[in-house]
Image 1 (tube, rainbow, N blue to C red):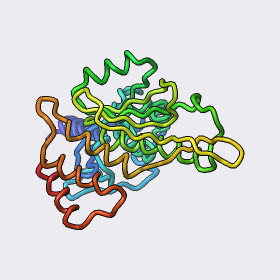
Image 2: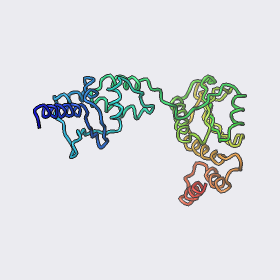
Image 3: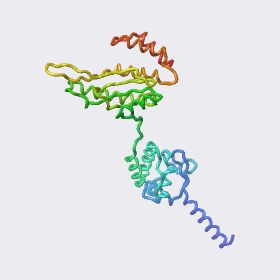
Image 4: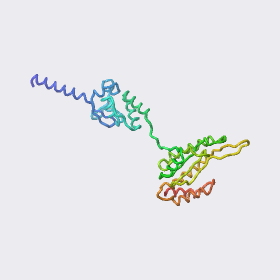
Length: 290
């Protein structure tokens, strides 16, 4: 080979090697990516430190640069390094996952954007409770819905007398139980709050197939030594029982299940007595069949 030909071959080999060295093959937690040194070194991140010689890098058996991280969001990290911007995920969970990766790779601008997005995120309500302010509005909701209805009247403005010592706590307990029931039976029962009513302070009403089937009034007037007082009670077991009873009216197209009605009626007839094991088993079997 002549001197000129050898020089030409050497030049070509050097050019090819220089071109290949601009590309980097990355194995991020088993996810493979092909990118350039320019992209990795575009911003002052951990990736720039890795590929500028300031940090040691590991290679897998096939020669890919190994990064021991989950590769799910690494494509988004590369896109942000290339373009300086990306469309953030809609899911709050994925935003949080991407934030952890951005912090690991020290992509500070992406960290800032994700933290802003997470701080301004407005969570969707788990359930919505209508607040009734007029009788026609209440009648329309009860008659039009296909679900059973549980209504809580909570109106302290109707009080004419001072409260007994435990009444304030019991009023709050009724409101807390209402919120818990809303979450537990969301989608199956329509829960509504009402601030109308002339005399009621705290009263539960239960509706099935558009008709009122039960009521639990939690207020009464008691006589003290010198004057009358308003007493608010918290009959938790009875409220929960009536709530389960309205589930018998869950399907408007047919009447309540006869076996379930008989089982729950037995619990009502016993008053405040303790149920037997056989009666509890009967009620459980009836609900399971339903």
